[in-house]
Image (cartoon, rainbow, N blue to C red; front, top):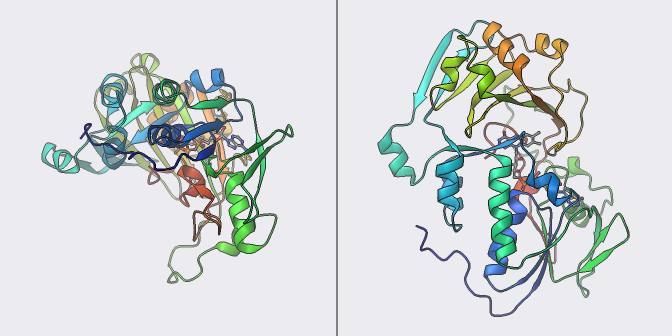
Amino acid sequence: MSSFEFATQAKHTLVFTVIGGSIGGLTSAYWLKRAGHDVIVVEKYSEETLKDHKFSGLRSPPNLSRLLSLLPGMEKVLEDKASLNLGAVFHQADTSEPIGQVIWKEEMVADLGSKYYRIPYSDMWNHLYGLCIRENVRFKFNIEVQNITLSKSRLPTVIAVSGEQISCDIVIGADGHNSVTRNCILADVTGNDQGDEDSDRDTSSESSKFPELSEWSSCRLSIPIREMQKDPDLLPLTQNSLWYLWMGDGIFHTGGREGQDQYAVAVFYPFSNFGKKDGEWTMQETSSMTSGEIRETGCDLKVKKLLELASSCQRTTQTPYRLSQFTDSSNQIILIGDAAHGAVINGPQNT
Ligand SMILES: Cc1cc2nc3c(=O)[nH]c(=O)nc-3n(C[C@H](O)[C@H](O)[C@H](O)COP(=O)(O)OP(=O)(O)OC[C@H]3O[C@@H](n4cnc5c(N)ncnc54)[C@H](O)[C@@H]3O)c2cc1C
């Protein structure tokens, strides 16, 4: 697999600006540079913030792990730093009564061609960043993009909040759920400068017995494994490679080991409760859930204990959207990653 050459050499060198220096942005920047293009990544946070971002993680199911394994050194990073996910165990949220389980057997994992991993965000980011630096990808940190201008006869120009302008041949929008790039594409599609997402909703789908999901909130918590090991109720959760799902009435919790030191828990609500409209990694936030929030989740004592032990909690509320196209009409502005992904981020199906 690792001998596969993902990027073929380009006949013409183009200048790419990648907006967003997270997982999607770094991966595309690396492959574009390897193909012989000139690449600059523009990121609104500082290098240090992303490098040291300890409190988040990434799920990498086999389809993603297979692609990641094409990157030099990535298989070793996954083997050394990630935890394995070997199955999912379902429980009732209010009683912790077991409902069922799905265990991924070796034959199935072999068929899928790679494993299901969970890895701390900074471990993945640092490796991808190192690869980009090695290939001489250029970076501009602390630059927040405000707009992209384009006319069919001219090159795209990326405009920062500071007023700085960067011209290029192609813009890659890897700027996450609240993507500025997506707004530019929607404005191109709809002629609406505000990027009216509602106007691009897919209304053709069959009517469903489930109400349309209009808003989705989640908390992503990190719990130090050493704290869980002190509690006999929680210790068993740390001793296997299973992903736990506690399912409640419209609310559910998931939990699993993520790397060597942390246990990741996510709580999902189908409505806005945390008051945080954001949809991006909230890089610096480390406050834990309030007792009121924990009560609202209606979970049993074991899950409650987990939530109370969390050393950090990232809250986000998002509105789902649907996009019918991932480029502007000139094909010079292209969306990737969460910027192009209609599923709510941090959801269990989005990786
Ligand atoms: C709170 C939270 C918790 C999550 N937890 C998990 C998890 O536990 N497991 C999991 O698998 N996934 C999780 N995710 C999803 C995961 O973050 C993404 O799927 C993954 O990072 C790849 O996304 P991306 O690179 O496309 O976008 P993102 O990671 O969102 O990156 C977008 C980048 O663009 C930058 N950016 C945004 N706007 C601008 C702008 N205007 N100008 C310049 N730069 C900009 C941002 O700073 C960021 O670095 C979580 C997401 C959130 C919001």
